[in-house]
Length: 293
Length: 293
View 1 (tube, chains in turn blue, orange):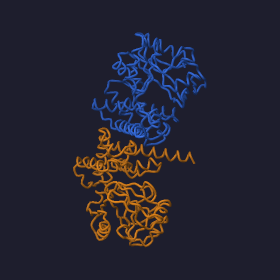
View 2 (view 1 turned 90 degrees about the horizontal axis):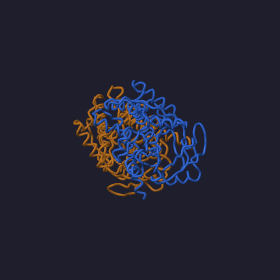
View 3 (view 1 turned 135 degrees about the vertical axis):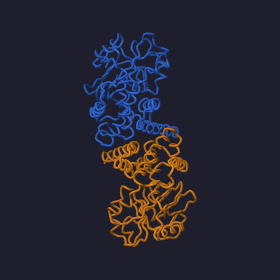
View 4 (view 1 turned 120 degrees about the vertical axis):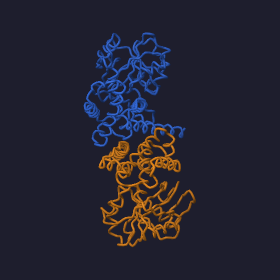
């Protein structure tokens, strides 16, 4: 969207994606339009040299390694924005590399059906915070490019709210092999989702965070149902990863809640169960891959 | 094993299995021996006409229909033995057909890798009860055929003990795509298994049943670990069903505990979660099958 609005953008990614983008541009198959956008692309992180804004979009399993490599090429005043799932990415980036990152809460339903193509099916808006020169500057860049970006004085709460949705939907969609719409169509799955949400809210509270917009737990459930309805045809990124035999971000989602719940002595049996089952299944895939090699 | 010991046995099953057995006998690939056994086979339930003992081995999803059809051909004094998973099969058979069935607790790790072949990997023993003329007669038949069969005065407790193992291992093996050995090799999966076991024991207690040999809950955990070790290379029947896109028996396992827990007001969140996830996944398979047809 930034490149389409005229900003100089370079994608850094894996070979097949970069090749496709170099040759044919990036095909945006969105709810509002279909358009091919010309954009730079490179496989090497050194292409980030001199960048003013870095959108840090790797999976949380790759955060530390990417941050370390990125730190070697970035200027001192570069703005790194973590657009990842989870609530502790800025911490993890800084711990690994010394880089200070701004976290953003990202709401978008999209997938990459083939290298060079992004299929967008819902939303596409950002939250940054707190209000200061940097966040205002970045928000203006996004808003000019038709990516709605608001600034919140409770960004940790915004990240936790997104964590609530991810914990509620991702693992159930993956383990049950269902869309979000199928989850809320089943009374049992809805009950499972609700217990998951209550556990995450209890851990948020014990962590001293108020998830934004979820002051009333019933609003949290209503919100989860609404998101599931808005994205009824969506399968979670965790489900997409599992189908492809790839590592998931479960450690940053239900796994984070399981760890934090244990530290804070808050019972989170359902989040622990969802985490454990996804983890077992993805490791079983990894072993199957080894066996095939 | 009965046929191998010389008893007149007829298998009733589906076409491919029956054809294979008719042409080549039944190949028993067991831990103790490999042997081809000549045995009768038929696809029609009318082949049960005149039978003295009926080993009722259908999946619990097919109990009612099979019982109704069987009732039409059995003599009044035929002995029906339910060798199924779950604790309420005799009830279900009687409710559907009026037939009185003796439940048996069956311990065996086996699979059918191809029609006409049984691959046996562990145990192979039965429990009947209570002691009376009929159970003693049947136990003697099995024991003569080298199938260890003991008689218990607490058969409901024996069935519940097996239910404990099935609830503990089946769904986790299926959802996590792992063997029993991999479950107990993971601290998180072990914790999940333990919570599942405690929930089932609480429901057993509230149901007025004492699972046999599990008077001490710690013995129950030790027992689950021991079974998992004895059958370390095993994947549960639920896992085998899910891989093949077949209906599972989850309604009679964690699903039974979820329903009974709700009736008795015993919290069983983990059993409910395991039931719900397996149910979603198997219905998603069923839909995929419809979509392909």
